[in-house]
Image 1 (tube, rainbow, N blue to C red):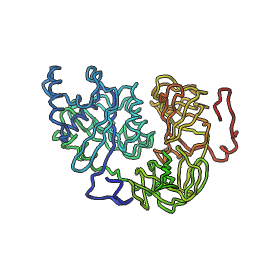
Image 2 (image 1 turned 60 degrees about the vertical axis):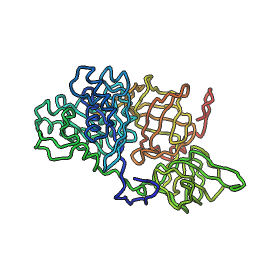
Image 3 (image 1 turned 180 degrees about the vertical axis):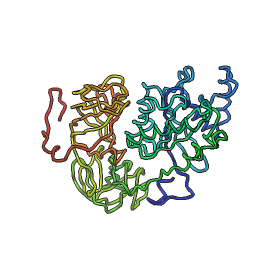
Image 4 (image 1 turned 120 degrees about the vertical axis):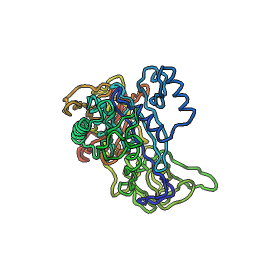
Length: 451
């Protein structure tokens, strides 16, 4: 759907909406085959791509095309028959456009699922009908829940290898739904499929007449994803300050960036955070033209009525719904680096367009996926661990709870030495404003890190 020529809350029936979705599954569950089947049967594969897959399949001694090769693009993936990196695929049907993130199944690549699912509106979790729900299935469900993916599809694959038995599908669907529901996943749709044979992927299966639900593609085409941006408080992270200082525009001062959430209107009373200075939106420029209203995810330039200090990394928000400002952040995180995250570690914290110094003050717990219990005081988080951390930043930040905003409630922890991404964080409820005010204002450690 166009975001530049439509009105917030009004869906153009003639427009083609966009769905971002991610796939996840354990090793050999047939995830790449599902994606290949989806692309092939929806006629989203170019002739030369299909010919290349057919040649590669014949070279392996396979009589039929191995559709998994359509997604496993790295040489190591093709040689080992596994998915290593996130593979993005773009395709479309007459009803909808899609951006697909095919994520790996190995435990050591769970962090790649975090990358693929971080912007997804739907996650397809595959399960081998012969194995049922396994630890990696629970891990993927936990990641989907933590990232607040609003729609989850359970694709019970390889139904052809269990005789297309309804009872097998029903037992797996019940177990997964119970588990994912306990994590807070809001919507779960279970579909029995055979990616290899094409059952219920794009066309309904003649082998499972007991199933009356949608195929995978039908569900992807019809699941509601168009949200009204006016439902969310506006958030505008400043990316760049524009001051041309030309004869034509001697006094122009604008703040450019992408609206992360909500709607901005000329005349809105706003607060610039973390400074707390207030002003009014005097003008909004979009694509070189002045407009009266703009909404997420449009990229615009905002002009304020007052000449106040605003710089990259500041957040402009409506004064009535501005987020709290704090230097203390408690969050759920997924550690993605090979080296562990430890208490006392110095990091950089990147939130929207702002990057500040920070210290990991505590790691209260690590999540045990088997029973969803919390392992207290683990001391560190290793690669792919999910846990709780407490971080103290050198400068105040304006964060929302991740449950309220995926864009302004998320952050990254970065190694200050080499720029490696260490941890992906989802902010919980920030410490009370009173507690933040009671904390020491600023201090400097022996190496010059200000806190």
